[in-house]
Length: 124
Image 1 (cartoon, rainbow, N blue to C red):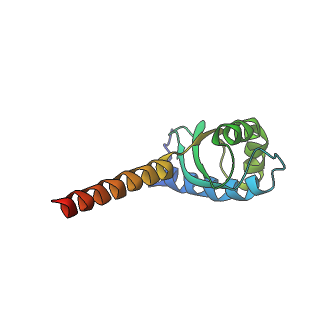
Image 2 (image 1 turned 60 degrees about the vertical axis):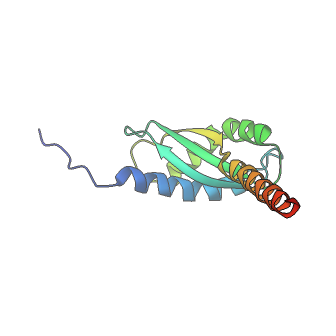
Image 3 (image 1 turned 30 degrees about the vertical axis):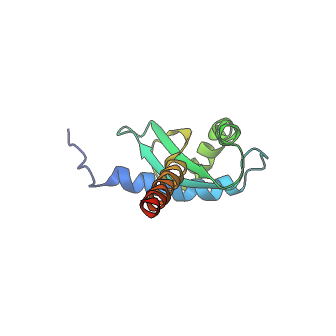
């Protein structure tokens, strides 16, 4: 029995292709809960059975959007079947990515701290 040679970085390439194809498929969705979505990352399990899809949102409610995307996951997976040339298309799990939200909060905290320090320095 011969073993298939593993292709280096195949998981990363598959995740990248899923991210590109999903971005196009999501634009076609008619669900009003799904606003202007940006896919920030896709993590595929080694067996390609599951994919965590991280998204950020320009406008809209992240919780409602996440629910809408997860309800559409079967439809989106079916669309991927037609586009991807891989044996197993993963089950999709959408998660709101709070990275940009946290970055904005940290920037605001830093700005406030700098402004308070400048004010304190000015008073002494």
